[in-house]
Length: 402
Image 1: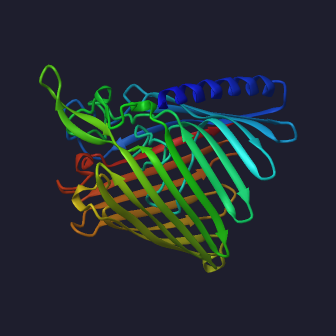
Image 2: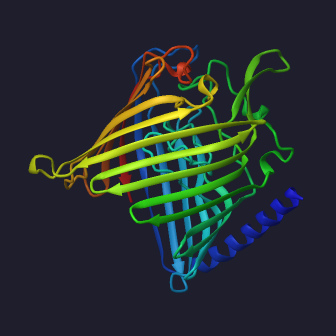
Image 3: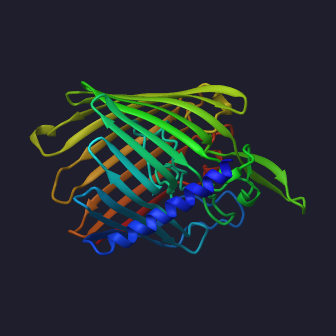
């Protein structure tokens, strides 16, 4: 039944997308995007054999297309991503490609989308729709496009979203020659699924969001394939050990809140999940205060503090099981739109630390530069990030926007 429904939805989505693509070609359209040249420098020699000390430069392209017609009632949105690199980081993805139809009280989208949920800065706990593009960075911010049909109901009492996702996308992992790899290779071709439908399991999500006074409230439920796989040790036919990704079915009920009062933000994210016949809870709380116009300048300085807890403890499949995150965001409000974010995450139990630095500055109307650094400190063998303990790096990138 589920496979038949998936095929029906897929065929319908393809037909509708092609139809509206043909219509959009005769209307005005917008094309843009950016080309990025970047280079990573690693501080330490690699832990594992076959890994290189430094990566070669890489080039990425993200091209965007937008068109609307019928007095903005219909639109076509597209975003494609491609990274060229002489390693396992080389990949292509359709980030977004969907048709949208809107009216006064409802909206409908069919195709490939990126959906973001969450309010916290360092980790988005409730963000569950899209698969992580793990080849891009460690911060889990980059996401793969998710095939779906999305219906939105807009009313005075709030916004209600329904998501039907007929196809699941597996996560990609670093090759044995690349950095940020596990001690044993991960063989995605050996992936296993709790559902007999495997990638074709029909996932479902519901979300209600509303602005109540100074509060932004989001309540959601997700039923489907977990985007974060567990890694199981198995032996190949030649007896060589590998890690096999296993994707279980989860029920996740989540809440995210944000209170805005003056220059301060107070945030909460948390969920209760049923997975593999067990129930666990995860939550994060935080605050952010912005000092506007420091010393009568144009500079704004934000101070951030967040705490994360996962009641699975050492069995958690995330590094944020009992951690405190601190940081600052500096926005210079100058013509070059210069900004800097510095943060650290500290494990309260064993004092292991992770530092992150991100800075950006516009060079011209089309050129900009960005500096990024990731540093591990005092990481012990019980930490989720222990395999990456030697992978401290800084990266510089130049972007051309068109």
